[in-house]
Length: 178
Ligand SMILES: CC(C)(COP(=O)(O)OP(=O)(O)OC[C@H]1O[C@@H](n2cnc3c(N)ncnc32)[C@H](O)[C@@H]1OP(=O)(O)O)[C@@H](O)C(=O)NCCC(=O)NCCS
Image 1 (cartoon, rainbow, N blue to C red):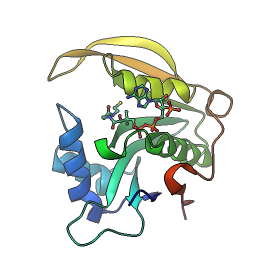
Image 2 (image 1 turned 45 degrees about the vertical axis):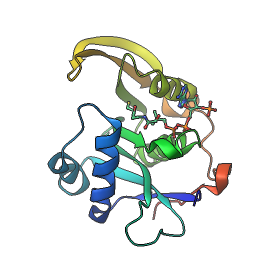
Image 3 (image 1 turned 90 degrees about the vertical axis):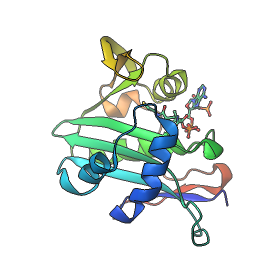
């Protein structure tokens, strides 16, 4: 039940992604927004952490996801979530690590993201990967209105933690992108 791999998302994952999105965020992306990132945005990449072997029909098989853009020299982390029951197992770290690898393979030099000022878990995650606080964007978020911290990893290589090929915790592993 706890084994997982990281793979590029397909549109078939949309219902599971939407379920996690709505459970994790007070201002969730809509189905339409997710769909646009999955299939309509040329800059967008979508990774999912997926249960292996697949669950029985009807059971959730996607544990988490990360949407990120690679825009020329920059990786922009756009949306990240892991279902509560699978948190603290290194899934988010593996998703971000994989995104940085994808970005580097496309010649990206740095990575940026915004995070709610009160989101201590996410902030700690990004700090542990070498991201630094750059500035505050006042009242950036709605529902509730809140400041964003802009964080940056520049350059990707020297600032980040070692980029593991294997994630051993609970048997999860990264499947290299094709
Ligand atoms: C933030 C989130 C993605 C982390 O996912 P996760 O898979 O549990 O994170 P990981 O297990 O990979 O944790 C990696 C590191 O992040 C930090 N971290 C993660 N959760 C933490 C928490 N609750 N408190 C403090 N630090 C935390 C730790 O440094 C951790 O390293 P450690 O396990 O060696 O201590 C998850 O809590 C989540 O989905 N939250 C709701 C949605 C959200 O806030 N998304 C981010 C928007 S920017």
